[in-house]
Length: 141
Image (cartoon, rainbow, N blue to C red; front, side, top):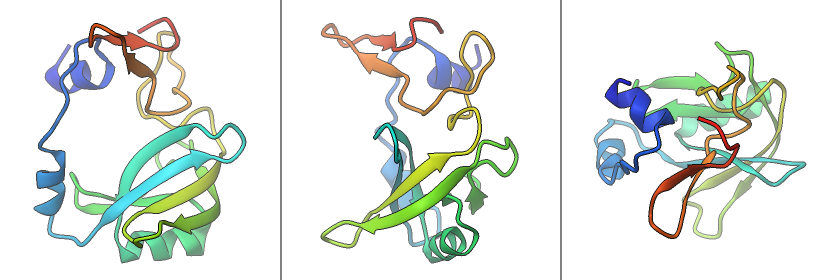
């Protein structure tokens, strides 16, 4: 597996503790934006939003983020068809993060696939066990 693929789909823990430094250097003023499934409560994605992403989300009714790695607007599902219908936007007490309450309108939310080739419901499909090792929640890679 390539290093990106290993990070995204592998069983070895390789946390990117430099992510916020990279976000700070992306050239945009952004804040965290979490997408949560209205029905299940599952956290699907944690991304970032700038004013354009928020305005676009409110206008089009779909979860929209600012891609800090590509430095461009990212309407979740525009290329995959796995849209996240925006039901409401919540703002935290310090007004420094957003919660997108969404209804998934496709097969999944994550750009990675399970062993059957299906989009995973969300990006949090692995957990740390008591030994600090990654385990797949779905029981398959």
